[in-house]
Length: 87
Picture 1 (cartoon, helix red, strand yellow):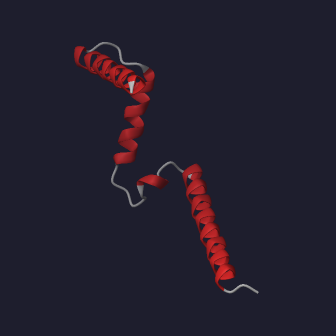
Picture 2 (cartoon, rainbow, N blue to C red; picture 1 turned 135 degrees about the vertical axis):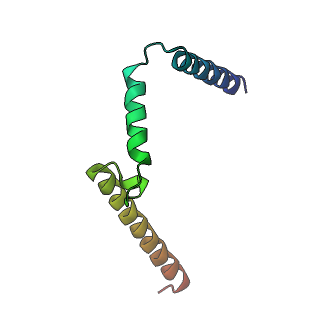
């Protein structure tokens, strides 16, 4: 319980610090600028779904995830079939 309170307090402090830096016009860290650039890219209106906008890496991860899910479903169906119709 105490750990969750500490994490929440840290998150609030981090949010306040980021909001203060952004509102006062201080120099923004380069990671924040990159984050904003990526966010704008992902929010553009295109025909591609957001989970495939990252390029070839995203397509590979999505395809392998679909393949593994199908494999898992097939093996589950095989297990159920063998449990129902024991030889």
